[in-house]
Image (tube, rainbow, N blue to C red; front, side, top):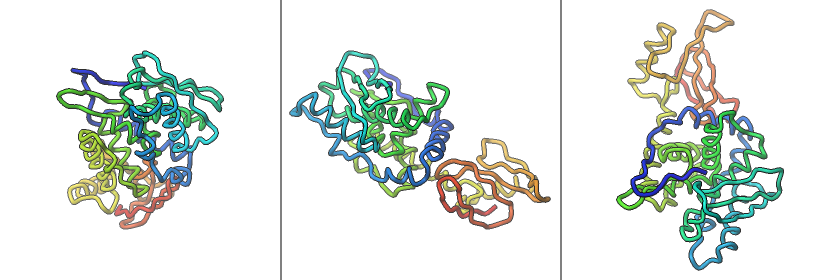
Length: 298
């Protein structure tokens, strides 16, 4: 797992990987099913992440790793944690199992509060390996791993490890802090679990708020009935001409092959799979992937 830190380190912000993050959420639903995703309704406990200086180094690391394995529902996997000097925060050797060898940066011998964050990414790698879920591009696959860790309840630790102030510049993983916030907000909207009380980093909480704002806007995209007046006007204008407006609108109009009317396609705000419905006024659309029922005004 990548670590970005140290005095003067530049930490990327915003949503540069948003398309891959959304594709990752869709891939998780397709591979695991809606019921499989909802089985991860309880996030990794802050108490299980606790690892202070009074704990035995190796026993404590194994305890945290075992808790992460349970949180990501890999009961027949065992993590063997070793410490060594390295540039990365951590790496894992992916094998057939059931034992997996995780090497973590020597600095976690003393900076123990972030060990669980590093392990969340590596154990998510193991989960995806067992699910045989991966993207062809290695960089996109790392984004998938971070997204899986966050969406399945362990990756809030990766956001909480983000600190950026006069003394510290630190970020773990491949998503920006705001992208982690976005994924966590999508999870919270689906499962009703608010992670914000767990953040010990003020900067992490602020990034979660920014990510949450974008996630909330997903539920106000046309043709969803909750879209705002300006969005509705743009949608109505595009509907009259049957053309998608410029500027990256999420919806697209298509001629209905079975008749003279139009159909509109748009991404589900929960799982991001594209839905196609007739342009026929108010209707309810049910996403076949995540089973969310959406109020639409087409």
